[in-house]
Length: 358
Image (cartoon, rainbow, N blue to C red; front, side, top):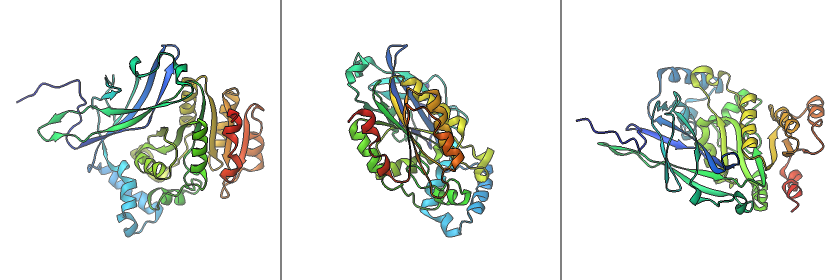
C-alpha cells in the first residue's frame, strides 16, 4: 500500500546517512535579518561504485601501501568518506532554533546540499550590535522520515552565528595546523590515509589564546569534504577553537589520487571572498603556509581588501620555504596589513592582541 509522503521531513532512504557541516551565520544588512549558510551531504554506507573500487587500487599503488596498512583501522576510517555512494536527489528539511526549513533544492549528484536561510527573529537580538562583539552557537538538526525499517539515526551540526563586528581568523589546515607535507605527493597521501594525524606544535594553544581575546575562527582549506570527520575529530581532540569549516569536494572519478592536491586556488579565493562580503564590518587575520599557494592567495586578497585584512601570517616550511622571489612579492602588500613569516607559533602570539588593542 502506498503511503502519503510527508514533505515536512527529509526523505532519506533506509541505509542512508547525512552529515551537517559546521556552518556560518551572519547578519545580512540588505535584508535586515540574520542569515545562515547551511551545507551537508547525504550518502549510503557500504555501497562503493565499481569505478571507485578500481581507482582505489591506484591510490594503494601510489602510496606503496602494504596489505597490513590497507587493512588498518586508520586507512579504513580515512578512506570511508570517498567510498560511500552519494545520496542523490534527497529532500532536506532542517530545524534551527525551533523553526523548520525545507531547502529549495534536493541533494546534488554528489549527495551535497546547500541552503541560505533567514533565521527566526525571536532567537537573536533585534539589533546585531546588541551582541557586543560576541558570537552565538546554535544547533542544527536534520528532520528525518520514518518507514517500516524504523527511524534513520539523528543528524545534528553546529551553526556559528558571528557578530557583525570583531576579528575573524581564517586558517588553512594542511601544514598550517596539521602536518601534511603537501609538497610531496607520496608523503601527503601517506600522512592523509595511513598515519595518525599530527598537529603543528603550538598552533592549538595559540588559537585558544586568540579565542580568549574574542576572535572567531573559519577553517578554509582545499582538503576534501570527504575527510571532514577525521579532521573534525583531530581539531576537537587537540582543542582547536570550534568554527565554521569550508572545504572542497574531491570527485574520485575525475582525478582520484593521481592528481590529488590540497590546493585549488580559485576555489579557496572564492570561499574567502564570500566570507569577507558576508561580514563587511569585520577585520580578518589570514593564516597559511609556504608549501603551496597560500602566500599568493593571501597577497591577492590583501591587495583587494587592504582595509579588511589586518594581518597575513605564513608558516615557513623547512621542506618548502619561501624563496626570495615569493618573499619579495609577498612583502609588496599594503602597509596597512601586518605581515609575519614565522616558523613557530611564539613568533605570532601577539598578533591578535595587537590588532584588538588588548
